[in-house]
Length: 504
Image 1 (cartoon, rainbow, N blue to C red):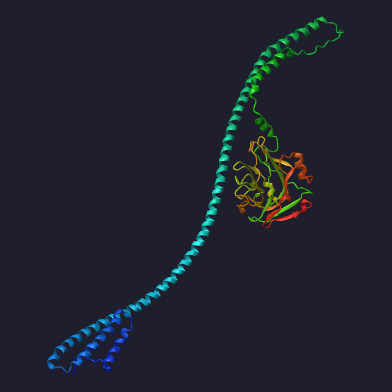
Image 2: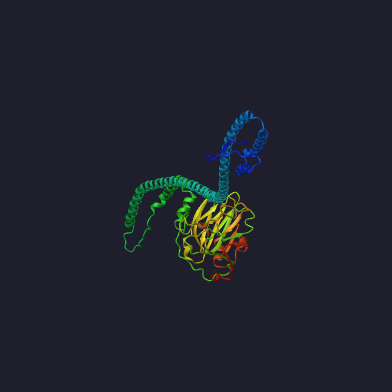
């Protein structure tokens, strides 16, 4: 039996292969690549082929039936063949789409892997950038905190300066008022004296007339030249009027006594003849210390590194209402730097002797309980020679004194009157503390050498200061010396010197 030809993909026709024949196997082989793609359509197609084979086998078994019965069968077979061809075309198209999608999915997976690698690299770079940014933020926060602390210090000092200026203006106004009152009293005294002189002038004239009359009477009573010549002593007409003059002076002085200038004003007038007055500076010639021995150990600070520091331990054990700090100092820097700094948790500037590059050369701020301070003149210390310095303070009337090379250079009062320096803080040499035991700034560091440093909890008298500057015995009662500087850092060198000239 002949079957209708089968249309191929290129439009040519070939006879439909019979089931079990070589052609049928070849047709099935052409579909095998498409059936191996693993799609759902590829899994259902073999079942359709099996059903088609069974159907064709039944049709051939009925080939022996009459010819009239075979025509409807061939019609159905052709329709089935057309349907199968359409199904084959649709299946091929679908399988080709699946193959293209498979290639596309492979490319997408490769792209996803590349994107994953890029995202991991970006995450690593982001973490590194975040870590660097956090470090920079930490440095910035530290700098901001330090700047805020310095700003607070400056504000407190400005407030203290404003209060001092206001107090000075009020004091000047009081002194001017006192001076005006004293001048007014003197003017009244002068007027009283003038009035007294006016009253005395006629008395003197009358006494002169009486004296002339007496002389005439004496000449008449003794006409003989042999008579002894009597010379009268000049009369003192003022004796009679002296009580009146003295009384007038006392009367004129009596109302002026309560108008005398106050003691501090008199002290200032006397201080004009002294070497230095309050808040004044004096230039003195540098003095060579000569041969000075028994100065004790010395510390050398070679540069302005913040690691160069010395700690005096155990610090102040009790509160201080009086203080004397003496030391030999030598520096050739442009500014003096910080000699000593005492900080507590409450205030990092409880006691400071420090200079910095922003101050006048040689100027040092003497701070007790920030923001109160006094500026001390130490310009001649920058000549690279050894100089002996003593800074003394007492809470009684807030008096303070500065001695350099046995000379009184500066003095004053009303500086932290009644104040007590508390115990338990950190005492540092060579650096200024912004916090307890740290927060150093190289612009405030001391560069040079210090020897024989000692601290007393009392006021040293000038004789003790002079003996100390000449290398004699150390005054009794020292609470701290350089022997207590058991901890030094950085490049600080500790040297034991027999005499000052042998110290580095």
